Every structure is written in structure tokens, then in C-alpha cells.
Image (tube, rainbow, N blue to C red):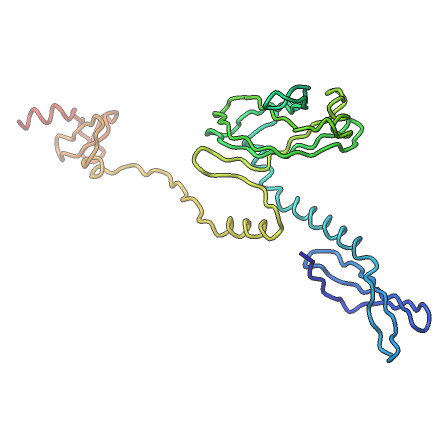
Length: 278
């Protein structure tokens, strides 16, 4: 979709003769976003009106706005990224030469070792895997979805084929590169837990804002209050642990207490009091 650009009221006109001009207009793509310059060409018509005929920097402007949105989305996803990294750890990532799943064609296999650092099983992962040369040249970025369970504290290995087409020159080059000359990055973008909860990157700024608002409106967990020392009356009703009874007032206390705090007499086991009563 084309971004909404709001004019900021600042413009510059560069005259290119009596019938041509280039206009630079400062526009704002949105809040918290640096202003951009939109350039368009004007042509004067025979009836003395000026008509816009070309947006000269539209492509560059859209690329710049895309990069800005990408950076803002990375910032917005940072809290989720940290929680995902706390739940699942990437121990090792590399590639090996092998065959595709059907065993009919050569393929490069991505091998990743994960450790579940969460306190419950992980039932699904989605990963973004950029593959570059060690000198930084980007070769490919793949995305994988894995539904194998990883129990808490367990380390497991996952293998995914890149699906190379060896009739393609770039894919043949990638297949032939030694693993030691490749840098394989792994970023987990979604974790699905056994209880149905999940941690997932937002894909758009609008989605990130909605997730942030939903988190802010979510009810906070109840605060655990310090346990109060039970009174004599509360201990008398419903207690299932061994107790001692005051022979004077009949109050019940925990078995570790020796004397009644109210009457000062020595407490007796509840079984003894019951036998005396019977």
C-alpha cells in the first residue's frame, strides 16, 4: 500500500525555464518518523496552468520509507525477541551437503542445534535463516517451520533442506561452497508452547502496536500476600495435620507448640484429649 504523506508546508521551486519547474515538498510519513523530500516536475500548459507530470524520486522515497519502517519494526519486536531468546537457545548452526527429502537430488542441508531453556515443552518453531559468505556477501535467506517437540532442558538437532535447483548457477555455487566459508544465522521468530501460548514477532508496525496495547490491557497476575499466622480458632476448624489441644480452653495448635499461649498450661496431643472425652 502507498504510504500516507502529509505535507509540512515547506517547499522549494526550481525553475527550469518558462514552462518547466521542479518542486521539492517536505512531507511526513507519520509520527516519530523523519520528514522526507518529495520531488515532482511541473509543466505549464497552453492555458497557463501548471500540471504535475512526474514524481522524480518516488522509487527512492518508497525504499527509504521501507527501510525506516523495517528499523522501527525491529525496535518494536525487541521485547519479544528477548523473551524468545530466553525460551529457546541456538547452540550451533551450519550446512552440510546432502540430498533432498525424496533422495532424488543434491541439496544443501541446514543443521541447527537448539536447547529448550523454558520450563515447559516447545511444540513449534519458526526460524529465519540468512546464509552469507564469511566476508558478508548475502547468498540466501530461508524460512523454516518445525513442529517437533523439545522437552524442557533438552537439546535437539534439526535438519532442513534449502531446496536448491542445481540447474541454477547461484544455487550450484551455494552447494559447492565449503561450510567453513559460510555464515549461517538463525533467528527464531515464533515459539509455540505445549499449553497453547506462543511468542511471535509482529510482521507490521500496526500489528506491533496492537500487540503492545493488548499486553498493556491484559490483567495483571494476583500478588501473593504473605501468609498470616493462623489463629487458634482457624486451626481448630479443618486442620488435617497433627495437633495439640489446650486442656483448659480446648483450643487446637500445631504439634510443635509446647504450651497454650492463652492459659500457659502444657498442651496435650489431640488423640489423648479424644480418648479422655470418650
